[in-house]
Image (tube, rainbow, N blue to C red):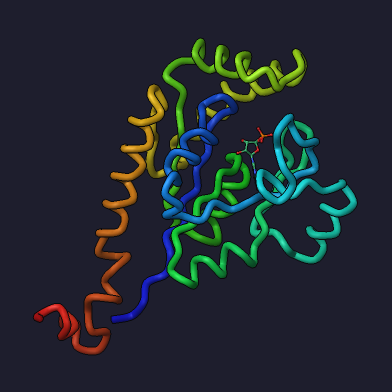
Length: 210
Ligand code: 5GP
């Protein structure tokens, strides 16, 4: 049977929807590989280089763009963010499932080169709750809070470009829904037919009769 490639999952949603928390909980048992992005934004309190992000200067980031190091990159809230390409490809080729937690612009670019990816949009239970969550995070200045909150209204309209929408009311519920999506995606015939069917005869591989 042919070894199958890893599943590429792209998770987006407005700031404060809880993507980070959901991804962390989803990967509690290290079943996935969560890509570490590069960014030109400054580290927040407690954030570590190479763990949370690769924190780069604008010049370093631009050099990486020139070198075609990114699978995608985008300017988000005035800073650059990008997904390092080589590691993502390496993991997928090894059969490891990969999670990209990236913004909508980036997700749409990834969809062009990986249409077989699974695109999941995390929604807050309400805009009021979203506002509360961004405020409680205490990491934003009043200006950056307004930028993120206003953007959220626009971003939510992009949910129709994604395959799945998951409301993050309670983290555990959101995580369980994503786990169900992953199970279903891994059973999709168009994903697994090469590994269960004999390509020439259209017959099920012999080992499936054992
Ligand atoms: P934050 O500054 O809150 O960590 O992230 C801001 C936004 O940038 C979030 O929506 C996050 O998903 C997005 N982001 C993080 N890494 C990447 C990336 O590599 N590419 C793109 N396009 N967006 C990213």
